[in-house]
Every structure is written in C-alpha cells, then in structure tokens.
Length: 359
Image (tube, rainbow, N blue to C red; front, side, top):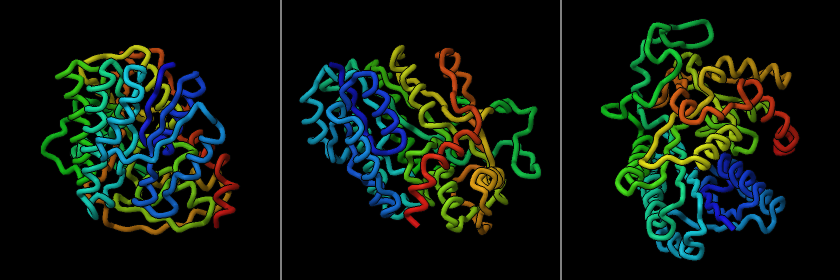
C-alpha cells in the first residue's frame, strides 16, 4: 500500500488532501499538533476537523500529534514506512505576518526548520517520494506593490499595458523587498525545497499560493481572509479593513482546486525543484470592498466593518497569480471553482449553522 504523509492534516489544505487521497485508497499518515490554536486562540483550533476526519475515514487515516520541529520524531515515523511513502504534502505552517513578529524563533522554527527536518527525513528514508510544499506569494515580499496600479471605484487594478496584466508570474524577483518575518521564514523554506530538488535531483515542488480558501478553514482575523470575512458576515462580528481604502485585491482559489493541482504534479512529477504560482488567477479575484458586498448578497445581512488607515507591513495592494506556467506543464488541470462567488457561497452553506450556534 502506498503511503501519503500530510503535515497540517487537520488544516484547510491538509484535510482536503487527506480526504482526497484516502478516497483513492492510500493510507494517509497525518501530522498535526493543533498549533493553530496556539497561534490564534480557540477560534483557530483544528481539533473539530481532526475529529471529523477520524470519524469519516476510520482506519484509512492515522493521526500523529507531532511537532515538525522535532527531527528525531519525524525520522522515527518515516523509518516505519520507508520507501512505501510515495508522497509528502507539507502544509503545516505558522501563517501570519502579525504573529511572526511576536515570536520570530517559533515562526522560523516551524516554517523553515520544520521544512528542513521533513526534507532530511525524505532524503534518508524515501528519496523517490514526491515532495509538495505549500509555499506563499509572500515570498515576493512587497515587490508587487511596485507595479503600476490604477485606482477604480471598488478596487486597484494593474495597468493593462504591463507584462503582468494576466497576473504575477514566477519571474518576479524575491530579492531586495520587505517580506515580513513570516514571508522571510517561508522564503527560507521555499529555497530549501528548491535546493533539495536541484542538488539531489529530487521530485520537489513549491506552490506559491494566493488566498487558499474553503469551508473547512478555521479562519481568524490574522489568517484566512475570505473564510473569516464570511464568518463575520454570518455572526455579525465587526470586521476591520487595514489600509488601501479596502480596494486591495487578492486572487482566491478553492482548496479542492489546490489539491487537484497537487495531484496533477504527483501523477507526472518533475525533478529539480519546480516553482509554480497558484491562485484564483484572472477568473477568481476580489477586493475587500467587493468581498463585503458579495457577503451581504449571500447572507442577506448587513456587514459591519471599520477602517484603519494603517496597512499591514509587507501586505500586497494587488496580487493576482499568473497560472500560465502550471497550465502549460499540466494542461489537464482546470479550476472547478472558477469564480469567487462560488467559493463564498460554499463557505456560507457549509458553515452557517455551526457558526450561528457558536455565537
């Protein structure tokens, strides 16, 4: 039996991957110690999702409350399965700009050192496995903010004459820009994943995500933009927009479309440390103001928010992913959730009863 190891298995992308590969008959080994609750408090806890996975999947899923910073524990686990491990999906992370400032050592330990520990475990126990890393568009730092933007009524938009008019490509530099400490730790991990692919000729890949969203995310103010916004819309919790007049734009991709991209790479992996930008692209992107309007239409409730002139350090004013490189390598891949409204409606339908009970 082929083994799939998934870190952050009770999180948004991790749980989506867990259910997907269990449904294909793989044995899934999940690693998740619920550090999201440590980062964000009880609202960030993923225990509810872990319990759901264990209830739904039974023996197809084996959970380990393991800290990826503990190399000896990872090596012991990897040694149990060795070359039976065909795929490693690494989604565990400290994901917040703001939280990283509070504790840079933990941020770097989880994001960078944890990634190194996993790569070393693969190198010693299953070097032919595919290693998929959930990176981030924050590896580009605030360089996207140097693009020529035009202010429209509800959003910022790129100058249509610019080379990145279809989205930001992997050609954008990661150097000499402000990343935030979170962006720096994720960039360190991103470079490590590339280097193990190039230096050892391993099958590693970095997917630099835009906003990854879906109904199974434990969205909080510091992470999980669309999910948290919809939770505020349903519960009436006041929301804060930070800077850019609420016209900042993000592209949003559904977690199931992320996993289908992962699987396309797994079925036909490339060696040498590939890098792909992955987001909603030109089909699925939204500004804060536009997302608020959509949430009101979907929930039928007025959205309560305040505005702060202070943008988060290193935050993007406009970010849309150019998906051309990945689509060229994997032309069979298509987005099922090809509009932001579909994603927001799904979050509403699957969470409205649970979130209303919580208030």
